[in-house]
Amino acid sequence: MKLEVIPKQRAMEAEQMEEAMEMSGLELWKHEKHALVFLPPPLPVPPMQMPLAAAFDEEATLVPPLNFAMVDDGIFRSGFPAAANFRFLKSLNLRSIVYLCPEPYPETNAEFLAKNGIKLHQFGIEGRKEPFVNIPDDKIREALKVVLDVRNQPLLIHCKRGKHRTGCVVGCLRKLQKWCLSSVFDEYQRFAAAKARSTDQRFMELFDISSLKHLTASHC
Image 1 (tube, rainbow, N blue to C red):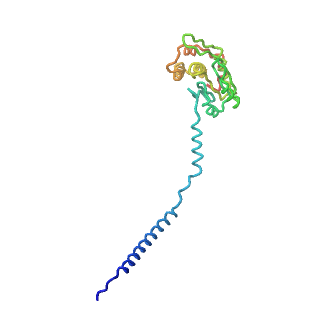
Image 2: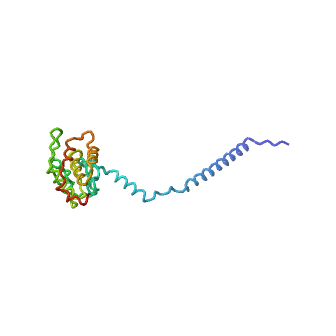
Image 3: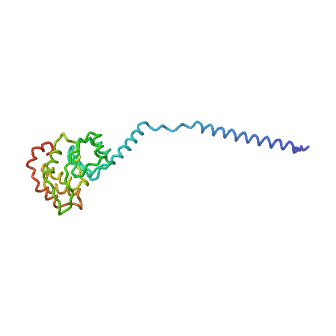
């Protein structure tokens, strides 16, 4: 005898299968959720890396003045420092600045010197173009006395662009250090470039160093 499944019974069986499938899917979702919750946390950044990065950022803010260079131990040269260069100058631990222009030192720069205990030595040399260049021998000589006095170092020599007036002082210093003239002129031309003046080079060639030789023991 063949048994027939009544429609109501079939509906109940279908409903039970659907519930079983839903429960199976729910258990799978719970399992996946459980796995996500217990993933290991990311490794922390080593504490030394952050201060190191900050240190690099700090160093990146040190901006030297135009035409800055080291001349000798404790002696530097440059063009006129701007406020953006103060942090760099502070890192040099300067004692003195040898300023070669006749104009008064700007108030902002003077305040920076006062705040950091830096002494200003001014030797006003006019910055004129050829053929009206008059380089005062006496002021170059007095500036060199300040530069060679170790009590004033570390120091910075500067004019407006760090080319002609600063170049003449450094060139005469090189003669005291017994550099040959070709090396003196090569250094001068590296900074003056297309603005090199034959009158500056002539001045350095004829500059008499005999009265300053006794001051050069620490730099020759």
